[in-house]
Amino acid sequence: MKKITKGLIVVLLFMFIFTGCKKNVSTEYTKYTDSFFDTFNTITTVVAYTKTEEEFKNYMEKIHTEFTRLHKLYDIYNDYEGINNIKTINDNAGIKPVKVDKDILDLILFSKEWYNKTGKETNIAMGPVLTIWHDYRESGKNDPDNAKIPPRSDLEEAAKYMDLDKVIVDKENSTVYLEDKHMSLDVGAVAKGYATEVVSKNILKEGLNSGIISAGGNVRVLGKPLDGVRQRWGIGIQDPDKAIASDGEDTLDTIFLNNASVVTSGDYQRYYVVDGKVMHHLIDPKTFMPGDYYRSVTIVTEDSGLADFLSTTTFLLPYEESRKLVESLEGVEAMWVMPDGKIEVTEGMKKIMKSNGATGAKAE
Image (tube, rainbow, N blue to C red; front, side):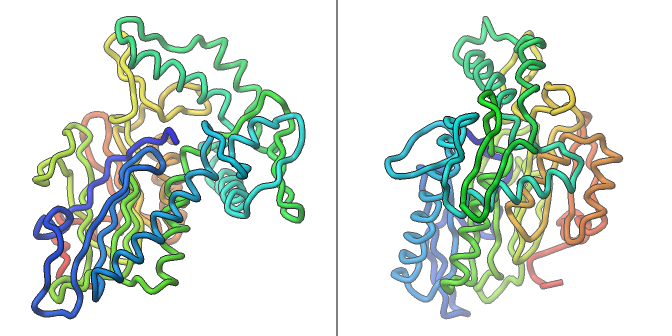
């Protein structure tokens, strides 16, 4: 799936993702890590404390299998034998309802619910507009000298077919139907985070109680680190002006938390350049142009799907509206990085930031 690798780095003490397996003298648990690259067009890294390597490998296999299944369901570009996915729904727009897996129904219903709750900024029915931008972006990256912005008339015509109310979900019959043949779904703003949450909940039920799943920067923290030292995990937030590095110098700050998700939306990774101006992938449904209020917005909340959805929504709202929305939602914190580099954070975010004295050594 074409989905941005959002700017978030797991920063663990002792360079912990990259040091391999290490026995801790103060605990019966051992730290393991592994990665895979074949789902959601990104690298997914899993770090966990388990009692044996065999136990870790068993969890890792289940995590990979589940991500693979969800990747196929949420794919908008490819067909898979025996599977009705988002692409199947799009291919049958204006033709017939498509019977789909419960995880597709749930994703669409979740997206419709939060679209209506949060100002109608993140719209999974924006496929016609986003497809145009996708094509121009790919062309611009392949031929930078001839990169262009899509014609306004094309975007306005496509926008006639992004009415989310015309995405008909029939829960009783497990079908989804797009009422107009010109409609299409693009679930890129939520699918990876939503999938990360589904996988996390399933693996928690399987018994993994200490780990991190980082799907291209959609980070879901499970329990606390069982190294006998720390009480909270440390997650680094990417500096939009610096390339990803391994020494921590590319982070704006580190936040410390357990049993939560961290997702960042930014203007600095999936983009192309037209006449010296960066044209990124976060398209404002009001203007049909890339949002320009921020360099990035980071959301912290328990549910990874919600964090993913809100990171896009808050990025596309002016600051006062964006902050008001976050502060109206229980259990949600945020960091905004402005175009001039100024950083704004919610009060709850301040309490978990390293720059404000937070550490991994205490639970609260």
